[in-house]
Length: 532
Image (tube, rainbow, N blue to C red; front, side, top):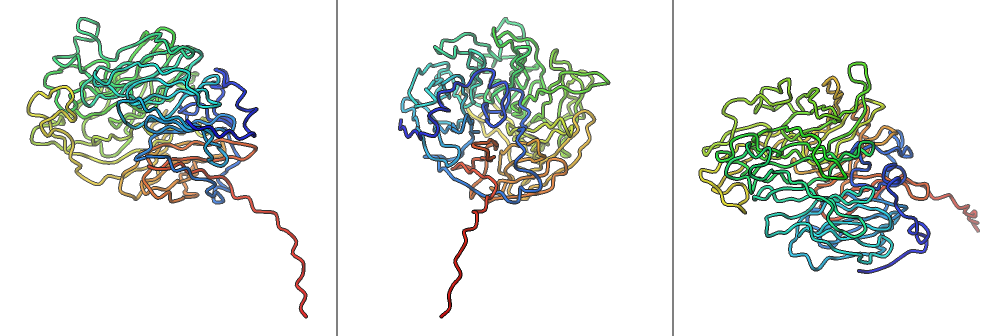
């Protein structure tokens, strides 16, 4: 741990980040991984506009030590940015990128991608790859505690950004592609003591276990992406991953609850209030990990609290937030052939012969899905939900034998084979009618995972599949600005304000890049030249 504390932040770092401050984010700060608890991906900042976005210019770059494919999204509090990499976290001056302190966890027994940190009070939290939650003093980087909540011997590892609530830190687990049993856990924010744990695959004999077969002990349903939260009802909304084995469903016939689902969970007790399963008995590795976006809309003439969910299986869903009732859905992509549609109860109507086979079977969308964990952006003023989507098909091959736990892609050569290059688009939908209002095509090699961040001034920030930061007009999709970062982008941008100046930050595979508007230097009078 190194400490370089600029005096300009001494006063700001004395102020604690309260639960109420988290509820009010984003504003000049970006205090949670999703920006706000609801996952709406919209900042109220208006200094950068469609009229002046062309004047953006890079301000600083921070090369993250050892970075090989950054996935994290920063959080910013009072001018200090907190950024994570594998088993490490950095506190940076958000104006200049200068390191204030850094912490490297040298005890971790594993390395894996990391998606970010959480802040509460004067602590900052992040998860190590071997599933320890680390609590640090956000002012100095001093270690408060390090608590284990998962064991890599059980096939799990950890990558998700924690979610900070009033007095708890919520953490999830990864590893569903190699056989494990997923769960969420709540740890006390002060002591790290476990408060509750909720498994996403039931034990034999528990309700839902009848939907499984021989692989229930290793059923997957990982929780590797952070959830969203409704403070008014104290409800967490968390998505789950695919069942395991990924491409071999012969011994897990049934719906495989609660994989590929959205879970509504009481934040105090961990008790499940309701669930909605998007892809029952999945054979295609279509995790449900994509933001559950919590909004209030006018539905059939009355105000209604709903969830928007853009799913990897190719459909955009609208659900009642209080009950989980299915309201409507629509395709996200044109190349969608695994299902004929969604029935009145929200259950897919599968096309026959679209499961993987030992010989191989072409299916749309492909294994990466129609969308994935990249963030979406909802703008209530325009009524548009903007989503990054991928038009691509794969040839899926199933395993010809039962795989063993710890085997990725089900073993036996099973898994997807790309059938075509694919193409990414940013698409903006009216989710209440299904209308596609505009789309922005990307022309690179379809290798990116950047999400979207919108602003009240009418912008969308993202990254394209050529390694550019891009800025679009959120009303029309018009291209306004781009900047080549020099590497592929796998994480989502944020925007924040320090000392009256708005900034935009995005990570490419290796480094953080931060931008703001060009401010010309005031001209200095030059004395006239005397010619003799």
